[in-house]
Amino acid sequence: MTSSRRIAHLDMDAYYASVELPRYPELRGQAVVIGGGRQATPETLADGTRRFARLRQYAGRRVVTTSTYEARALVVHSAMGMMKAAQLAPDAYRLPTDFDSYRHYSRLFKTAVRAFTDQIEDRGIDEIYIDLSDVAGDTRDVAGAIKEAVQAATGLTCSICVAPNKLLAKTGSELDKPDGLTLLTQGDLECRIWPLPAKKVNGIGPLASEKLAAIGITTVGELAQTDIGLLQDTFGRNYSGWLTRVSHGVDDRPVVVSSEPKSMSRETTFERDLHARQDRRPSQNISRHCANG
Image 1 (cartoon, rainbow, N blue to C red):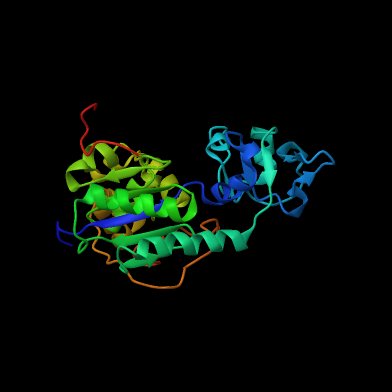
Image 2: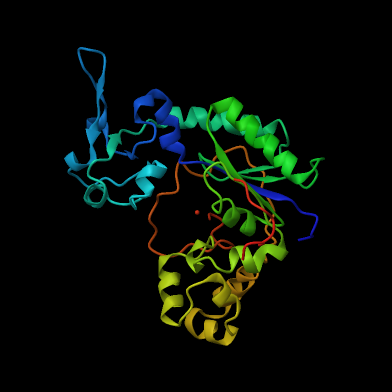
């Protein structure tokens, strides 16, 4: 990896919900959960108005596909069981999934990005990595132009982080959602990345997070300052070495150009933690500096 690399991670904001809401403008600003099945299809009444299912009415074993930011404020998030979500936000509205529409908008936003470069790694229906190293122009201007192109093509917003590598770009794209534009350098590591919970690093799953917490490590910064011998006692040589590297923002993986999406969503539950290197399948408007601590 060289310091001249400019790797962007683009993540569509609350993607499935954002695709649905233009069809149901009366739900804008409301807590909405996507994933209720066909029984969640709105009913059109005689006067032309629509009646929407409420989360409290749900009974079953489905999980939340996604939720609006208003629902997330009520701690309802992707992959949560719908029954648990109903306990947290009983008045939230339910909508069914429409994967044909999600695939359509996915093609639109990726086509818009390819007008800037074909150096794109497709990571799923709503996220991509982009290698901007050879794209001329100021980094913020280029990233801003990409965001504008995506919104013009889809009517939807996205969040982008540009960083020296995929690890920092992925982590950074979550920092300033929604509609974020984040620039990170290695110099931003201590003030922007180290305060984050360790689980925010792509590749540190729930099991690894629990093991880290058991030895007193809860943040990325604490991980970076931990003796590798202690990590090896808990995780073994290979994974502990990877943990140390990523906590210092080190990642030399290239952007792998591919025309095919890797998955429809990021809501699969695995029996073990995925490793960002070995498994290859990983999870605005701010200053580049930490002026306010």
